[in-house]
Image (tube, rainbow, N blue to C red; front, side):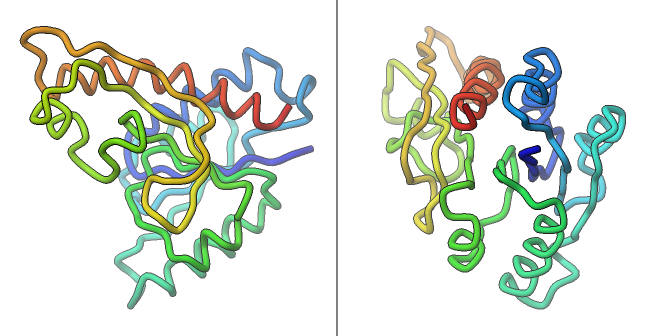
Length: 191
């Protein structure tokens, strides 16, 4: 069985979309794959309860408890590796990962980003797109490299900017597309 470990920092809505897709799409039977664990750097991440409700193992590693980023990433790798992951998914995990972490999971570390990469890597993507006068925004599933929000693109969804849109209204529409393309990209990657 190929194990997936998902990293979250908050609501876990993309994680929830992946868990639903895995259950509805019978990934265990069709792809010999399961979501084995959901890990967070925040004890108050709402997505942990959802994972537990689906019988998925969870753990919290508070990044503030570590003296430096390298120590946190080393502990996180040890926790992830307990589940022998075929794939590690970043789903709203709000930490920049060290080169050693990225290298350890090279070829099996994916992320979802709320822009049409390579445009607008980093934070505040929707406001930056509005400020730039973009007519379209979107989301990108990509392989993770040491360069922030770069790496091979696996899937994208395009969302039009409508008159009167704000960063918040765009965020809602883009997120709904993230929930569609992330599970699809994961299933395709594993197939």
